[in-house]
Structure formats: structure tokens, C-alpha cells
Length: 313
Ligand code: NAD
Image 1 (spheres, rainbow, N blue to C red):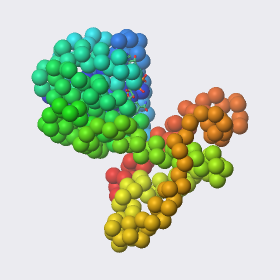
Image 2 (image 1 turned 90 degrees about the horizontal axis):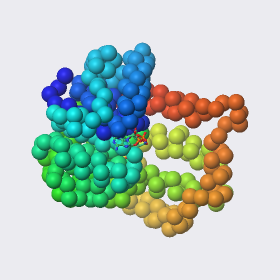
Image 3 (image 1 turned 180 degrees about the vertical axis):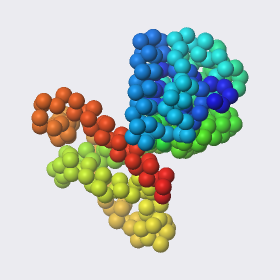
Image 4 (image 1 turned 90 degrees about the vertical axis):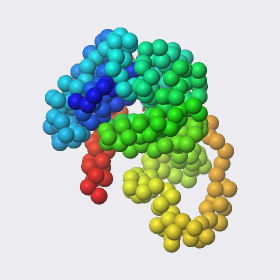
């Protein structure tokens, strides 16, 4: 295994995934949680997941599942877990008070070169890292669920984060097979969620205005836009749809502006429309209590095949 340890703080959904991704890259992983049973359950779950992934040929990295599992160990004492840490990935629940407490504890125990990274989906680096002794080593590395199958990681600096912290985190993410992007500064929602919210809000308005059903609006994405978006972003898509991006703007800019001007206000995300969309995605049969689980497993299988396909292209 490589020198130094990766420490994962919080062994829930995201912590487990990060542990698996780092182990697949050959790193020693220390998985810490305040709840002992949670650590035990996480280690068991990781073993089960890795064995299944190996069986289906979808295990990441060059090591066997047994070798990867042996790289991961559980901890319930923070100070002990942080010994020899080179990179810390925080994955506790999305609650600012809790994160502040955890970062002030970590700040006390780590050495001056360890990188302290947060998985937060929407808390700002400024709010989380202000005043820490090691603020120059702090960064947000926001994964996408599930990180094992979706490689994007948004790196978001605090204004006092040193460039070397960004570069080292970027290199580490590449090394474990993730696809990092660097935000130059913080912005509410980072980038993935800002794009995602733009799409969700227009989907909502189209259902609200009676233009299309909830399932059909999703089909527009999965069978239309999404086919390209797995390989190209919206900007290069435009670039290729004309003779370059400038030519696209000249040809279509006016039409796009006309349509955009008809977009409605920010949705309430409550009431009748929420009810209608919710209804549309539950299957009729009530004898299937695990509908969400079944569908999530199907999603993960699709994503792992897509990841394989993307590697081959
Ligand atoms: P989760 O609830 O599944 O797991 C949180 C874990 O943290 C639990 O195991 C809990 O026991 C542990 N914990 C609680 N207090 C702790 C403490 N003081 N010290 C150590 N461990 C503690 O949550 P999750 O879905 O894994 O989310 C973790 C973080 O990842 C959040 O910030 C979330 O915003 C972010 N994130 C989540 C997703 C997602 O889709 N779930 C995607 C990207 C980022």
C-alpha cells in the first residue's frame, strides 16, 4: 500500500463509498465514526459490496476485493484515527454546527501537511473553515452520489486555501480514478447543483403548466439530452451543433433568448405539483416494499456499465 493514510470521518452512505474508492486506488483507509455499531456495519457492508463487484467484474482498481478490504480499518477514536493521516475526507451529516465541531477537533490533532477535505453538498467553505489553524490545507471535495460509479468531484477552495492544496487534491482524485474539476471560488450550490436545479425547476414548470407528464419529462432527459450529456457538456454540444460555439450563438442565440424569457418564477417545490410528481414515480403494486432499493440497484448497475463504456471510448 501507499505511504500514509486516508481518513474518512463518518461511515454513512458517502463515507463508505469514499473508503471503497480510495482502497481501490491502493490507499490505506481509516474509517472513523462516533457510533461503534455504525463502523462495524460499514465494514461489513463494504466487504459485501466489494465481493459482489468482484463477482460481476465491476470492481475498480487493480487489487482483488480481499486486498482492497484489508486496506480498510475501523476507528472510533478521532485522535487515533488521524495518526499518520495525509488526507482527511469528512462525511458527517449535512449540519453546519456538527461540521464546525468536527473540523475544530481535526484541526487540533492533524499535522501541518495533511489536507482536510469536506464532502458537503451545499455548505460554504468560508462558513466551515473560517478561523481554523490549518485553513490553508482545507478544501471541499464534493462527490456525486454514488461516488463509486459517478466520478465527478467538485473541488471548492476557501479564500485562504493554498493553491498547493488544490493541486494535491486534484492529483489524488485523478490517482483514484475520479474526475475532479476546480472551482476558482465558492458559489452557492457549487456548479453541479446549480445546473441540476436549473433543470429541475424547468421540469417542474412544464408539469405545472400541463405541458407534459412527469414521466415523459424524464424521458426527454434520459432518451434525449442525457444520451449526449454522458459524454459531452452543454457547451461543447452547442459547439458541435453548428460551426463552433460562436456560430451556434449567431444562429440560435435569438431563439434561445426568446424561449428563456418565457421561463416562469422559481417554483415553490410544494403542494399539488409535488404531489403529482411523487405519485407518478411510485409503482402501482403495493406488494413491493423495496421499490426504491430495487430502482437504485438498477441505477447503479446502469451507471457501472456506462462507466465501463466511457473508459473504452
Ligand atoms: P449519512 O447520514 O449516511 O452518514 C453520516 C455518518 O456520519 C453516519 O454514519 C453517522 O454515524 C456519522 N456521524 C455523525 N456524527 C458524527 C461525528 N460527530 N463524528 C463522526 N461521524 C459522525 O450521510 P451521507 O449521505 O453519507 O452524507 C455525508 C455528507 O456527504 C454530507 O455532508 C452530505 O451533504 C454529503 N453528500 C451526500 C450525498 C448524497 O447523495 N447522500 C452526495 C454528495 C455529498
